[in-house]
Image (spheres, rainbow, N blue to C red):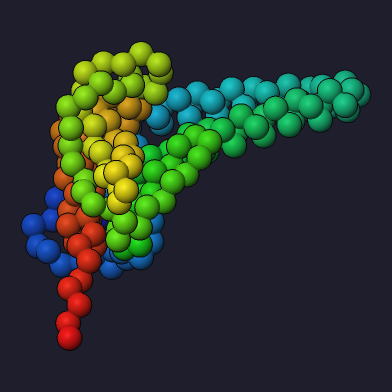
Length: 186
């Protein structure tokens, strides 16, 4: 039975080039869906947090309120870590491109971006110290600095080569649309 509502898959499969009603380029959006490794890790962390919350309730029922408070704090920390894990990735808007890492966020306005390109280079496997040969979407900034936006071996694109190619093409299209400085007319 087909479902009548618009899914994320169908949003990219439209053949007409009419903007959808929710297609607001001023809002930050991730140009791809989170990968199964990222979603699975966050789900396992939330499952762990539910057990820790249950333990906090049992500890509180036993009368050890100090221990229950510490356990509750640990559960909240695990929940916040899982939510942050889901936010990690590359986000684009009309204002620029944003690279969200677990502990930091870097935003680069399109005016300061010189190029966005795909490069073959050693990349980290699932964010671990081990490196493998793979593809990376690299952003070159004014001043010669580089920012690694996406890799084909991170938690979003491991074993999803087509999704990496589609996401890289989408970010490059955003750069092509908003990155070129308009020529000044006199």
